Length: 224
Ligand SMILES: [Ca+2]
Ligand SMILES: [Ca+2]
Image (spheres, rainbow, N blue to C red):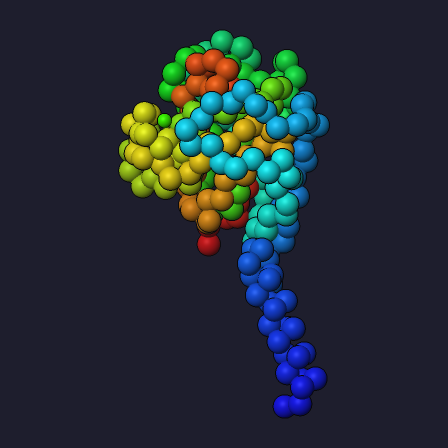
């Protein structure tokens, strides 16, 4: 091969590797999201966390999912460890409204609480997004995201995310980092985990010991 051909082959290899690294592929497409408007700007300074990720302040960037991935959670039924929220109704977790202001979030009681979405049948899941609260910079404690075909989460449970580094919620030590809530929400990657139910746990936040949800979105494809 002459030098031009070698250069060309190397360039193609670099492009191919770069697309693999960013999650792109022949059967993937960018996940399109409708994001609410930000309620605050700047880097928060009053957050105390022993396990906080590095805050970059940058947007998330594109996320790639298998072609045909759909939003599965819209208007699906929601259950909770606190069936009578202090503020709001459980159905607001999947009503598609994600704005940060008053009237858009539900408030669950103090300490450990969870919400659970029933997708109606089992799917291969490719993205789960959660907006706990984005009216103000906060960190929610012990954020744990799990997927199962068991509505009671007793067996066949896949843990997608767990930032409970000291196991204070008792679901196992998590290796993930705490993060500050922002308007773009948090994207958890289930990596194709299969399940009908998605359960999200938390254990208070840096402003109070209550738990909040503006919206949860679950994306996936039918199980083949
Ligand atoms: Ca909502
Ligand atoms: Ca903890």
